[in-house]
Amino acid sequence: MRVNRGIIAVLFGGLLIMLCQSGYAYFPNGIYVTAGGSYGSIVIDEISGSTSTQNEATLTKDNTTESASGIIAAIGYAFETEAIRLELAYAARQDVEYNVNPVFTSPVLTSGNLKSDVDVKTLMFNGYVDLHMSEYFVPYVTAGAGGARNRVGLTATGSGGTFADSNIDYSFAWQAGVGVHVKVVNNFFVNLEFHHVELGSAEWGPWGPVRAKMDSDKVSANEGLLTFTVFFGNQDAKNQPPTLLDSGTSGNKEPTLLGDD
Image 1 (spheres, rainbow, N blue to C red):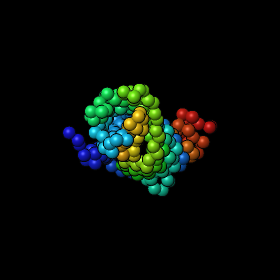
Image 2 (cartoon, helix red, strand yellow; image 1 turned 120 degrees about the horizontal axis):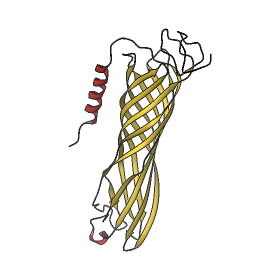
Image 3 (cartoon, helix red, strand yellow; image 1 turned 180 degrees about the vertical axis):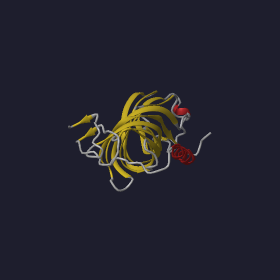
Image 4 (tube, rainbow, N blue to C red; image 1 turned 60 degrees about the horizontal axis):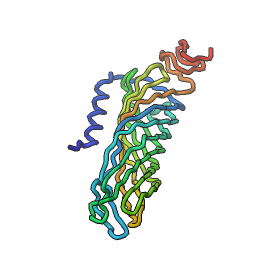
């Protein structure tokens, strides 16, 4: 049973807001870096096939969903007077497998065996709106767009022998999600996020004497993220907690974890 992703996002976002106290909370501004990991599922749907003799060859398996972990690194900027952040983020995900035997239901090709892996990387320009509703828990919404690099490596075995091939597709990608910042000290945050990413297309082949080929225009991911953010520069809010990195000019002059004075 498929659950509407939009409903999940709305309910999750509403839950985060309900968990937060009301009232304005200071949030750091300026340049920041974020790094961490992801875990979720990569979905490859509506895979179609063809050969030199069949424009539409029926596949025995036209979709796959596989779990995958990943790493994320980003650099961004948070505006001082607006609850808005902009960032450039790179993500690399663990290879996922698409294996099938036989590949096609056509009687001529039933002996075909395919083993393949799909490697997905993205570079995204993301925007964030932070909901400053609590001192230590700051929910946010995010959306962004960029590019995906989807590489497929395959080994196919059939009556014509064994064939190896690889393809790289560069596709438009976009993402939308919700999350929450958890403040550790004033400019160091732990972030929890869920997002959906549309990753474009992937292509297998062609391979073998019959030039077998497969492709999908519906590659996507649903992922949970655990990341860590450090803001740089002076943070001048009054009565703020100590900062992780500080030049000694914070509003309350409290000791810092890594200070200059």
